[in-house]
Length: 468
Image (tube, rainbow, N blue to C red):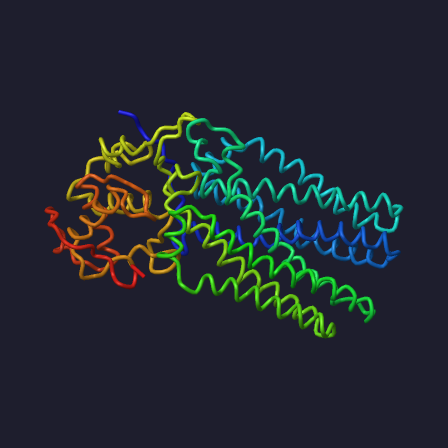
């Protein structure tokens, strides 16, 4: 019998591993997108300063670049490895899938990132030591290399939800994996948002200038950058939604709150209003206000967007072939990958896992609850917390009135068939479904007497609240 080598699960009992990954990733997006947007903005300002004899603008580049050294390149260089570490332990097979497909693309991105880091140091510390033409060339190299890192990462992020071309499954190939309609839509959306973030964060730097005329000039440039990028972001967001695969669109429509789309457009409108205010009255641009808007972008803009992007690719975590619980859910001949679903269907989940404790491979009355707990950890905890808080608490999807047998039947009907769009297909054996249902019953307060070995035909026991 072929064994399935799922790695032991990283279980975070409080908020769940998914929330930790999401929190680190969202903060990193703020740092990284701001740095990329600022790099291109610096190239524009350097060119503008060169053509209009405005060396004072180079001083703004120097101050903003010095701020970015800590804000983006120090803090970003902490959260970046934090993403690698947290995703590796939370989704080892997902990361493995991305590395096997894009190792050379990531290597390319790292080369450009090194050039980017060297470039920002040179822009900051050589601002008044290089001739204008050399400084202009340096700023252009900095901007282009920085945006190249964005281009590579967006291709990988797009693949995580949907490969660029359908023939990738049969033939493989980096370009087939990378470039699809969603790739360019997401690139356009992120490009617009990164300029918006650059304008917001740049306000923290501009607000510190004492020269009122210079502050007004810089505030005006930042405001126009923010207004135009916010409007473009709203349009790009609509384009992005139109390129979502059918499964992602259905999850977005049925599993995410109705306020998501209005909230994203609302934060863009709010930021546009903020930029109009600072354009009309530059005196309103103060450090505290710009800092508050930066936090607002993080909390009300980036966090919902990143959570939604993670949610709409469910039940997959990479390329529509690695489930969120790490099981390989489809054949990928182009990569020499075969689905593990037939093996699980033939032999059961517990018997096919390399790291399963021997005492749980055969489920009995004595170990049924513990077997259910292990099943929940392995198959559910990547998306559902097993406590009352955290990410999508498992207990909230069932009511205390549901018997263990009813829950077991629902698990087999929903998971074994793969008919639940946003849930992985896991063909549980009867005893495995009953064990998992027993554990879920212990979370929802179902008394032990409600446990039944028979699985009668009943309706789905999901609560109204969890179905909404």
